[in-house]
Image 1: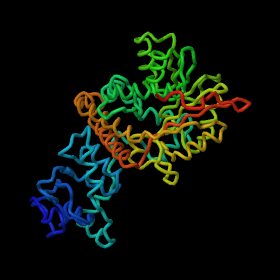
Image 2 (image 1 turned 90 degrees about the vertical axis):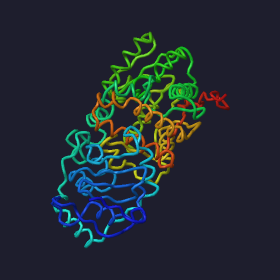
Image 3 (image 1 turned 135 degrees about the vertical axis):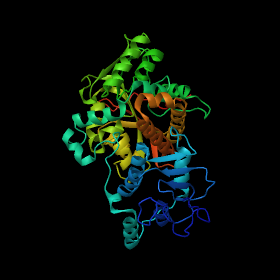
Amino acid sequence: MSLTDRNQGAAGAPATPPPGSGRRGTTVADVVRAVTTSPLPVRVIAYDGSAIGPADAGITLSIRSERGLSYLLTAPGDLGMARAYVSGDLALSGVHPGDPYEALRVLKDELRVRPPALAEGLALVRGLGWERLLPPPTPPQEAQPRWKRIVAGLRHSRSRDSNAISHHYDVSNAFYEKVLGPSMTYTCAVFRSPEDTLEQAQATKYDLVAGKLGLRAGMRLLDVGCGWGGMIRHAAREYGVKALGVTLSRSQARWAQAAIEREGLAGLAEVRHMDYRDAPREQFDAVSSIGLTEHIGVRNYPAYFGFLRDRLRPQGRLLNHCITRADNRAPHRSGAFIDRYVFPDGELAGPGRVISEVHDVGLEVHHEENLRRHYALTLAGWCRNLVRHWDFCVSEVGTGTARVWGLYMAGSRLAFERNGIQLHQVLATRNDAQGASGYPLRPDWLP
């Protein structure tokens, strides 16, 4: 039986389950009606034959199984939705799984949800069957909950950080090549125009970092959390800098070192597989940290920025590039979906906290820049790549993991567009004993 409510999903007559469905008189459509407060912006159809919402909606959510409903009921919010979607028990039509941005935008802007009253909620669950409140096994893409990760060590211990990095970055280098493009750069690009290609924008970003650091031939650069070596290869190739990158991902280090050999940069660039805390105890002319701060934990900021300070020679420059909250009041820890499927143990602080911590270890901040809108454009480009190479990516990592990436990148794009999160570059110097920074009266990296 198909149920189409009047007024585009507003409350109507109770649905009747199809013959032989085994339900106790409550349909999935009844549940959706009970927890929404306004006309649905999408069509919802369910395994029990019930449906709700406008028949001509551009986007349809299909709850394909009882397991999918159990995911939604036992983990309300983004975690339950993610579990059902990644497992294939919740499907979206009207958008591509590599870029479900439009579906997320519609749901965020137009869907209004309310918790039902206790008596109403109990009646709904009784009608569906109490077994629907038994949590199904989680999809294999999901990391353990925070309390279980203690087996791998304390939060942000070396062993636990290694596990977290491996969960996200050691997926498949071939997969990343398709999603990120030839630059293999998994950080915010810088666009001179929205029409720039990803490759152009990533090269612009690296040139911006190099300019802020004042890189010149013969200088020595340390890049912590170097990923696939994009910054050090660019610095060596374009500026003649002797560059060392360190990454906690073994797969990244292998790929980066092979790329260095292919590009004839072995005399200038090197990537090592190691924790940033084990980087050589020597001083460099410049240090770049592009996308690592998100992984180290806010309480570790003093030790982290102190470590980077100690790797700088007097009058050397530090460029810290990281995602932040939009203010200093928001919680540091990420939401359930990001923590379990994307960046386990990831934490974000507000830009003011980052700048304060940099100052508090004795560095002097000279410049700060918010690249929030650039990250939205970057993520849109990565989603386009995932859509374009969807079949290959699925063959490489599986449908569930590919869905995680489409959901995560599209959702992050929306968050950057709406100023839910930001991307800040902070430029600082290690001053000498006389307070000299070596920094010019006006920035020497601006056109």
